[in-house]
Amino acid sequence: MRNYTISLSSDQLVLLKQFYSNYLLKVEQPYVFFVAHHNDTRISAFKSGKVVLQGEEINPELVAIKSFLNITNYAAIGSDEVGTGDALGPVVVCSAYASIEDIEFLKKLGVKDSKSMTNKEIVKLGPVIANRLTHSIVILTPEKFNEQTQKGLNLNKIKALLHNHMIIKTTSKVEAAVPVILDQFCLPTHYFNYLKDEKLVYRDVEFYTKAESVHLSVAAASIIARYAFLVKMHQYSKKLNMKLKLGASKEVDVQIKEIYDTHGLDGLNKIAKMNFKNVTKQNLT
Image (tube, rainbow, N blue to C red; front, side, top):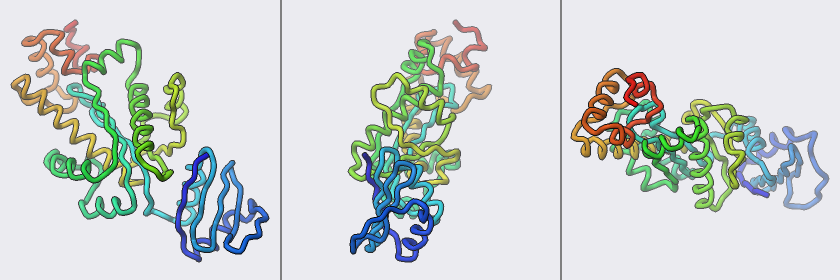
């Protein structure tokens, strides 16, 4: 059973009671404004303005309330990943919690989706945001990524496993029950199917495409993940004594051949995602 509390104005309480007019329960207590039951969720609204949601999966109900009342300023956990379009370097997944105070902090920083920010901006903001926000992050090295793909896991399953793990870690660090928002990379049914063999699965997740525009916690997670990715790429570059290219361009093809010629297949396995076309089309194996 999960609980989530939101605070509303008296006008919003009246509107919300109308919203649940067909699902009201008879509760006669002086401090209770109304109680409703909808989609296995109990909604208790108090005259003080506090509204408590109780249920196993409360996010769908919370989404409906936020949408109906046009509430945009609320605490949440956002999860995002980077590195999945880069032939070189790791896959990084981060989930981050942003309180209402954190959201104001992020707005002042000018936080937006990491894909629309320069690397210079990422390097500047990444450590600041990571230091402020409660978050969990995992860096899956190319070598580990290659081990997973050799076992038959596809990219989306790898991402689902990493996201689930980081979401569980972050929710365990946050006392309040808050919405969890995931930048959607596959259908929700597919996402949970990828996790069917996991002992622990966090199921109360909201899926959105372009989720960074839905909540700043997702944008923050994206920036932290991107910063960690760039730091790792810098480390790899120093080790190889060459500035590694991002993405999956023809320039990356050239670098992959150069790494292979200098360090062999084992060396390339530590730097590149071996199932990418940039590698497979060169017939190096």
